[in-house]
Length: 302
Figure 1 (cartoon, rainbow, N blue to C red):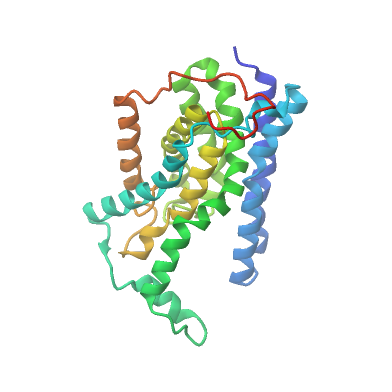
Figure 2 (figure 1 turned 30 degrees about the vertical axis):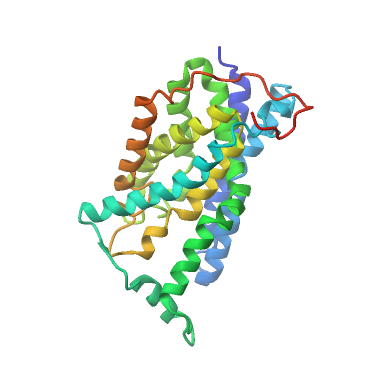
């Protein structure tokens, strides 16, 4: 049976904190482009912790449970962290491949986008485009996912660490699909500003819900296999770090329809992976561990 009061408190805080921060950059529309970018980055980064804050308050204050129940002191199966780290760049690669296969873009090994960016820098930058590309790829696959996990945890502590377990009395699939849909709706103010789906921001709000349901199924699988928010947080960080890598290699294309995992052509890779999880009986997860790890076993691998 659902405990509705903590759910209501969680959702009120997750949306009530994040949505004002999501629209805050609109106040800087008249400012210089650099100022607008900094304002958006700062506000949206803080907004990612709205769900995490909601999870902490709903758990401790409303449900009157120990914060240990959120399993922040648990890692779970170590091999799942390889999935969390490597699957997002694989999905990004698949999105790029499907974008070319369906004719929305062509491969550009001349790195025209990078060359244009370098040329736009005052005085130019005497660095070959391929060096910038290699540096970008290396950073996106190594340090960037770890750094992004800090902000990814803000979301995953809420969506997978709190909301998903709260909805599990409905059944795994209903909990996975509903939590993913709520996660997608939460993005609406950002999507309406042209993020992710720049040429169709209104339709993009619905497209983001679809993308989040698919991503949510994958992140939920990571959570349910580890019973830890750290695995989906790492996957979230890796996704944010690598989602745009196809931009380096493709030209021309519209981000609304292809090139990234959340675009419609990017859904194909996620659908195939979720289908594989279902066919191989990895999802739904059958061997759930319901109780949190005792305080005497912090950060232990299951």
